[in-house]
Image (tube, rainbow, N blue to C red):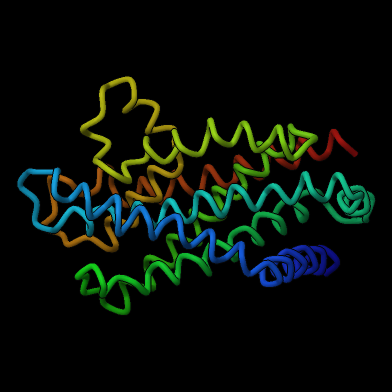
Length: 255
């Protein structure tokens, strides 16, 4: 019971911080909107090929993936913030397992991401999508799994850094490559062989691929999913377990 309470306290604390910072929500929503309606609309005039749907609809799953990527990873910055102000030390000396701390932090990032994903999903009528209720629910479930995975990855990375500035710098060398090598803007199968191999190690690739299965029409073959739906789910779940395990070991050494 104490482990569940620890997870609840950590999640509740992060959600309260998020809702108090309304500017954070607006800024996080502005980025995907710019990519969807400006970049996507612009590229749709340039991208040619035999497609069953407009390009702006093709990148819609990728824009959801972008929302998850930025929100989930940057939510892990709170670890550095908590370390600087002593809150992390109080958590680490509490009689709870490191796994509970990691799961609490990852779930807080997951819930924050899902709130933003739901807002982006609500825009689907404006780009000509016709989604059923089950498709929307399926996209939310996949987003939950992917958000937890990316949040766990962010915790692993944040565990190695002591200052907010150093973490921010390294994020710029991780987030954008992860996004562009995820199949969000173009199919992974169109990448050069070397980049294709790197993409297959990227958990975001499989999350966006699973979202394509859920949101894109089945007839969209040439620019549709790159892997099987089962492969996508297995990779996301296994990656989440690995990231949580690594994070717990890192936190164990810091006690």
